[in-house]
Amino acid sequence: MAFRIQGVLVRATPDRAGLTALGRAYGYRLYEATAAGLWLLDLAVPVPVPGERAAIRTARTLAPGYVDALRVIDGDESPLEQIAWLTASAVVARQLRQSVMGFLSDDDRLDFAVIVTPDGVQSIGDRLERYLFRWEGGALTIQPFADRAMGRDESAVPEELSLIPSVTLLPVETLGAEGYPLHGNVAAEMPEFAQAAHTLGIGTKRVGRSGTLALIEASGLESSVWDAAAGLR
Image (cartoon, rainbow, N blue to C red; front, side):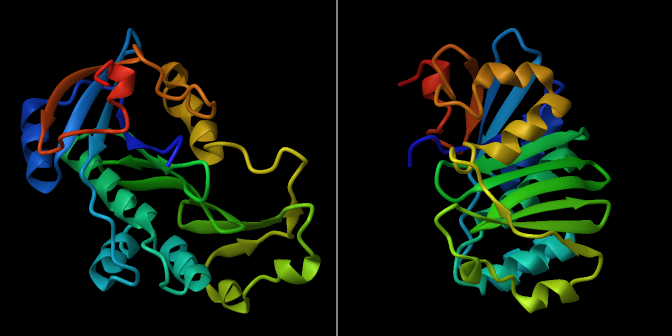
């Protein structure tokens, strides 16, 4: 799919012990952002089977209200790749012993960003169908949105969402004429985590342009969506 991005950003050089431990959990490709003091890991994160209990249980220990809301809206019909990347980002933070930003986004349905420290998840921004999520400090805010062409009867919010502890449901917001922004949540989180990340072009159609990354090493992951940015294809 065009414009798909995924990975985990770190602000300090990953140490050898951490990478070795990470390699036992996931295959990876490690890149350095050119002259930015920033490193990007792409990971071989398995896509969960819809409704897969093990993946759900693991992610739920990290952000229970958020995962519960995803399941209410999705009904266990989709893979929910974002919960696998939530778990993977927590593994990276723990193994590398530093704060990280994990993300997964495309130009169609995915737009997930998470900030994790070795002590736990700090914040999550996500999109599922016509809902935006913000999870922070155990509290979840849900913003339903609609396109201008969508009727209000199509914008009804499931009652089960109101039963999730520490949840705030906002009124339905109608998007402007330009529609949903490309990589909206990811682009919004990037500047606070690492200002230099703008060189990657996330949020624009020039994302991953050649020369923005250099491949440092690879282990168990033969290719990546970022290889073109490193001039490898």
